[in-house]
Image 1 (spheres, one colour):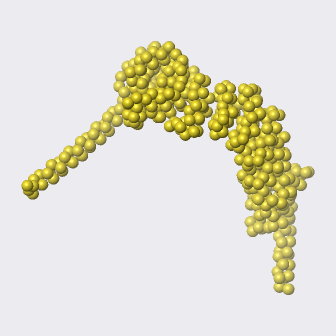
Image 2: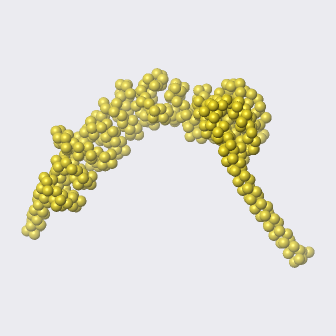
Image 3: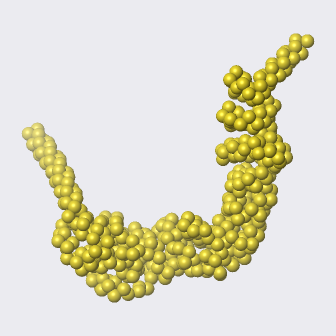
Length: 506
């Protein structure tokens, strides 16, 4: 029989247990915080002690063996992490091998390998030191422990270790990367794939494309983005390995291959002006003969951004074909690809795109023509004056104002000749459309009388309150010909207003 005394005792014991657990939890938190504080203090101290050693080693003032002797004094985990981070922060293509030798000498590589591969670590380290070339495959090792090894609490430490091993010089890292591709955890394989791209193993390209195909077909747990990012790490010198995949049976696969080539080309073009000689001949022929005619519109669209770098007659003809493609997405990307003065020959083709049925294509055509300089903008202005399409006119005027082309119109008014007539016609049409804010600002800010007077003649066709205010200011403050013109315009506008009121009363 349960008495009240027993119930009270039970409650007290439960309360004591809860308080004890809370106390243990608080002690653990304080212990962890103190441990982290001590860790970062040791790490900062190690940075201070070993900064000079690392700097001298990177500057090649001391040998790898001497650096190992000086750095092996670091014994705690915090000191190891500090040394590792300082060396990796200084790593580049010129010193990667020497830094890798230091990591081997300090025993870091063996520790990372042991964490990532367990009992196989020693053999893998020996193979790596021999710079052995590994056979790369993605056959995943599966056994009774696979479900446990796939758990994040076990796979994340392996991922960290593989990331460190992947930062070794490529000839040392290859063995570890190839082995990590067999890991059952997708996190580890993702890190290995990224390391393959960073190290640019040519032998890894077929495997990366196999992984890309699996991701496209949704048969892989490594994301498509991770695999594509690894492929983008390759350079123009590696594009010859991409050619067989440009005609892959899977159309989405072809799209990602072309898009990867596009990103590689864009990356290279930031440092140099590309032309057809920078591309493998078979890739050049494949793009111009097959890719531009691909049945998948997305492939044709992305091809324009690659073909523009060829910069020859065949490239011009290919872009002309793409500019008139039946798919608006292809036309859009083709117009954007033509924003290069080399393709001035395609200006008439882009003029025709100003009448495109898709507003995004029209907008891109306006921007492309504006990018060609005076010759392109003059063609744009002639089309603007002649067109009756309100939407096209709106897009052209918006781009004229957004791109700062109003200043070119004002300059044309000052030069005289055909350019003046063209600029005057543009200013008048913009006035009638109500797009006058920048023109009015030019009237107020210019100092040369002739373009100011011409702009005033255009703006008076449809005077706004803002323009009338500027006219009044000029009339009261400018004693010269511009002031005379402003006063005459104000009188004429007042007479016109009075006549309109009189007609209304009659």
